[in-house]
Each structure stands twice: as C-alpha cells, then as structure tokens.
Length: 360
Image 1 (tube, one colour):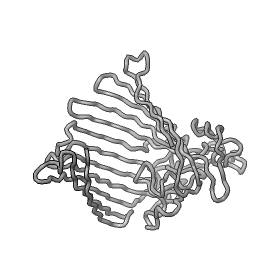
Image 2 (cartoon, one colour):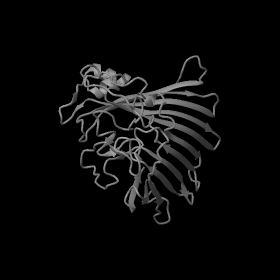
Image 3 (cartoon, one colour):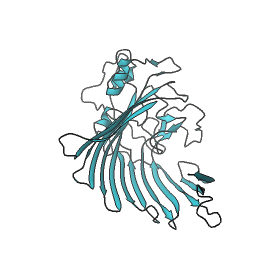
Image 4 (cartoon, helix red, strand yellow):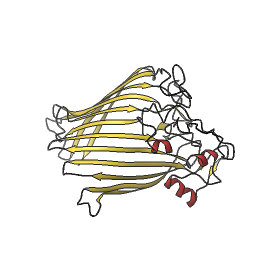
C-alpha cells in the first residue's frame, strides 16, 4: 500500500492561527478473510487552531473504508473507479451492489472523529481528547453520543524522572446509536419501514455488511484492543483461522498508563486496564437480558469484569563499570510482566525477557 501525509500547513489569511493537515492512502489485505482480497482506503483531514504559542485545538476526521474482494459464496465487489469514488466519498453502492451496500454505504466504512486540546508549558504538556468511533452514517452524525474514548495525558520534558508521563482513558461504547433499529427493506432495497420507526441504532462497531471478518489482521482486531473477535471468551479463537464477526464491542473501561525512568536510568512503562464487557447487539450479551430492541435504559445490564496489567522496561547494562560495551555499542536487558484476572479471559500470568544490543 501507500500513504501520503500532509504535515500541518497554515491556511492563508489566518495569521498562522488556522492549520490544515491530513493523509490519503490505499492498502491491500493479505490474510484469509470472508471477503478475500479486500482493499482498504484511508482519508484523514484535520484542522488545528492555535490562538497562542502554547495552546492548540484540533478537530480531525480519520476515515477508513474496506471494499472490493470476493466471498466463498461468490459475492464480489468489482474494483473500478466508480466503486472507488463511492468508497472515498462515503456514498451508497450502485445498482450492482449488495442490498446492505445499497441501503447503507458501500463496503465497511468507519473511523473516528477526534477533538483535542493541548497546552504546552515550559516543562509540561497537557492533552485532553475526545475520540468518537463510528461505523455508519448515524455515528458520523453524532447519534451514538456518549460513546467514545476520553483521554487525559500529561507529559514532562525530562524523561529521566521517576514519573515523566501519565495517561488516563475512559472508554464507553455501550450506546451505539441505541438498541432499537426497526429499518426494513425488501430484496430489491425498497423500504418496508413503517412511518415513525427508529431507523438508526445497533451500530455494531468494527464490522458491517459483507465484511464479516471485521477490522482484523490475521485475527487480531485493528484499532481497539478491547473490542474482541469471536471465540475469545470461550477460548476457541486462534489467529490461524478466518475470523467471523466480533463478540464484544459494548464495554465500559478505565485505563491508566504511567511511564518514566527508574533511578533516572532505566525506562519503564506500567499499564492497568479495568473493563466491564457486555458482548454486542449482534451476538447478544455475555450475561443477563438482551437489551436489543428494548428502549434504552429499561434493561439492567450485567457484564463480565476484567483487569489486565503489564509492567515493561529496560535495564541498561554496564560493562566493566562503563555505560557502553564500547564507544559505539549499548546493551539493554528487556523485561515484561503481564497478568489477566477476571471473567472475560482465562486468568494468566506472563513473563518476557530479552537482550537488545544497539550499535551507533
């Protein structure tokens, strides 16, 4: 694939207060998928307003579209300029498209809308960000509020401090434009929806229509590690087989990350995540009553609780009391400690260790 990037460029006549940036690219999938040979398009566009030298505000759309490919059942999307234009612009499929692509948008299109505020002090940088996921038009129209990832990040210029970086994230993906979607169509795409029926809801993040392998790469979810492919909870998932759908995309989570240097010498990173997992509108909840088709808030939902943690870092090794083995070589001992405890995954503890030799 390829990716063209546009670094921030000041918009004329704004006195360097308004900037534009973005990206444009196309890629090919290489794993075994329900739609074999699917292609991926990306369009990113962002605007940055800088009222002063220290403060900035960003609004960005990061959009992805999965299209093309052919399924084992013979369903195929032709690669041509017409379909490519519809993917880039987020339009419906033409008359030759599948029913799903004709009533929604062509392919599987989603991404995130990001709003960010950043303040850069003399030694500290503070960042606040709201990241809204979407997987169809209702999400792009903010009908899935309050879903999103809310982030607070604090970073110090001195990375040798015991604590130089801190991040807190609050994840919420429960609503998905609501649990009711009464939209109906016949086999020709003609609407059978009764007047006054709610036609947005049950967004089902990370997959749509014919693209049942979802946003995965060799079975691993791309973009959000807390959204899970089918088979994780039952222990049947493996990256060696074709993934079909997701089993968990409705969850509430808190994530904390801390980074710094031990004794001002050895870098480390600590990450802790607590999640309350509720399955999906498509495959149903893990526990209790299914909220799909019922008014929002009328079902008392129960989820599977999970805590995951990791502590990773590097110990800079001395040779003969010297910082480097030689004037052009440095040796580091890499380590990692990992743990899962809860009802979603099997309880586990893991350890990694390695050596890294750098030449410069």
